[in-house]
Image (tube, rainbow, N blue to C red):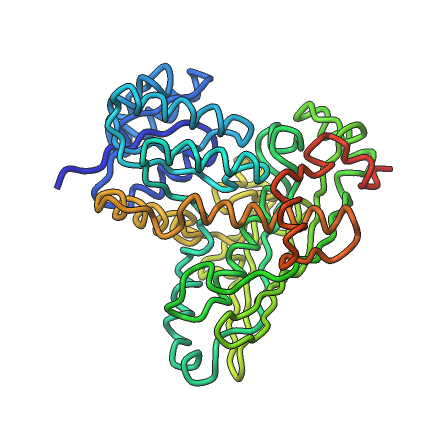
Length: 417
């Protein structure tokens, strides 16, 4: 079997993380890279070549790359997703023989954009993969296997809680709500909402089996609204939270209904850019009748200790853990983060599906449903009320809803000092 030729759009942090994941996946090679900053594309291409991941040829644009790859992965910023997908579809119409397209979470900044993306790929029949890595995490999948007998005997989970927290994003555009689509709720809440929903579905049922009935959420600007932290953000990333703030904390509850039994279940999500511990923490747990599970990615089988003298000689915090905030003391080390966080398995799922001429397990339509729940959470926070997802008028309003924070009017709904 000829390996699938993958082309990456974007050469930043997430592209590099996926490249690391692909070292563990068969039947795929990174055949192309394109990025608006040539030096970044060159650096990623060198990493690809050095690790034997493929040719990693640097192309000047998507149109040119589309003629030399089988699948294109969109790892570029949220605010250019629509125009890049338009370019991909145009290339297919002009003869590019693509099998599919991947989009890193979130699919879009709002439902209008999400529907535009889905309409575009439908024009040319492209298969799709929506990359939501946390659903593919081995601890998540293993607990499903381990607790399958309990689910079948006692019934499915009725409560899940999921959280993703770290000290803040790498790139300036992530902090800019008008370009990113919001703050931490848009950036990471999509993860936590998705994995919570996924876990509530009875084993063997589709990923959207449980029907969302309501969303209640709160957003706040806590750490990054303080004057000294606002200044740090302005100095380091050029983003002014005194003028266009975004939330650095979000929490809420999504209520679901089993369409076959009428059973109600709930999923709680909490996300923040103000986590002051070792680094990135993913936390998930769930409870069913008589059984439970818990996942915490800061629990590692490997700890290292680095004293002050050694730390001053070498400073490389993120070699231990993504978004690490310290390079000394007792550090939790995850030696295979791409696999732990689900990146390896989501890539394998997509590659297998595209080779078979199918959508991945999570398609862009699923990404649209997650976007709907994120928009409902923003609406709930703005209006300080629970959003009824069974109300046709509310569902219609969500189709064109753009959160105030996303509009750059976060100062109207967030306290920023």
